[in-house]
Length: 205
Image: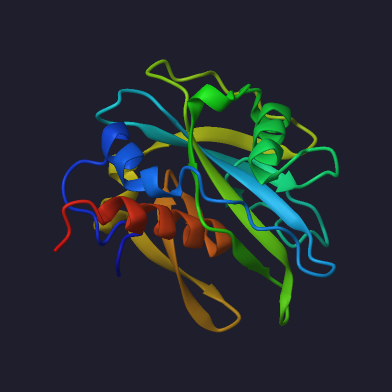
């Protein structure tokens, strides 16, 4: 089993993240295609610059909700007046966990990717925006209507291959990461793996 950060060597620091994502900082945001819907999530980093943590949420369990009980990044579907998925991520982060992000804290946006439908095809596209809010780790205030919990996970934990696992979904073993008996998998794991892959490109052969 491989961790999401299998390509990373050395410490995952804020400086390393900023350097790795610098080429993406001014990349244009993808617009909707046809009737696609856009969703924005925030990869919020906080804590010591040499050993940051990432904010995750645990959604409430609801019958009929595709993402019921899932662990994810703060985020949600875009609204017409958001002005872009980066701002969607900022708005949703404040609504869901009470962190008010600023543009000064923004590092970069990852390349957008499709959101797979439950059965086949795509239900829209996802944009993940990376922020560093400083060395003081903010207190999280989860919205009880949407979230069962919100918590911080050290990057060192996510980059440790011993925390990698798999989850059975529709008869297939899906890659995942375990933290405090919670499982990070699916679309969130895919974005997390892309994030760590980009960071791991520094000093790569």
